[in-house]
Length: 361
Image (tube, rainbow, N blue to C red; front, side):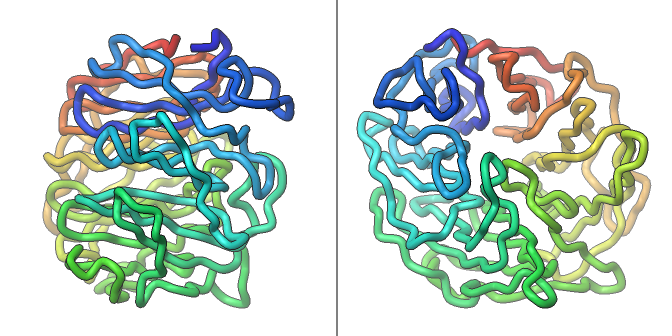
């Protein structure tokens, strides 16, 4: 691995096997498949104890409509680098193919069973803000071992809210269901992967007595800035975010146990810091990455209860906080620091109570 590797995204297909993508060298100086310059990748086979370099797409960092910043793998063999361009590998990264997205930018991508789904959007953001100013969104899918992308019925040509205002969208997949948080706050659900090309149907935009929230404009990595969606082993969670004031932010957690049809307020996350990412766990608790650190709930949300409590976490206090948190199991998870210059990703092995860095080198 290059000594100046700066991780921007990570994906795990088991507790042992994970890929990380990032950039090295000087942005704008990519001249070819040189591991010391621009896009680089690494793989771990032992849960982050050690890393080794692997081939990466020759793409460079996000720059308007060009470059990549995110990575997902289906099974350690089939994988995708995206944001905003889209590259695919079907041989564990030995070869990468650029996918034609017809001028649209890929702002989110997730895998499930033998399929991959992605949100393609029309955006005009420049520089590293590749997901900014997006005003048209569609959901596409392909078999995991192929590159035949087709639109998903019922989730094509999604509007971004009233009068085409710039917004974002987010995709969440589980072993049985798929959920798409659309730009206007509507949640679409895909029910049976056997019919993965559609239709995905709208199940919620106001809930039953509780108003769900729209995702709002995108963060730099494409994730929404005002409404974040996540699935747990017991239901669906959405974190609705208020304005930032003096480094704090109101973070209201909504919860649904019927696939987004009805919701209740499960409580509020700690106000310190600005929320950047939301993750659920198979056991039910949720975690929130912020510009101050990582917050983890002490238990799963309870039915129609607004008394969700939060536990103290250790080892995750960074000056700039984290841009992403994701749980592989109820115990093991990984987080990406907002300051990529620390050249590490953070791991928890006890459900988010304790965190430690794993240096990618």
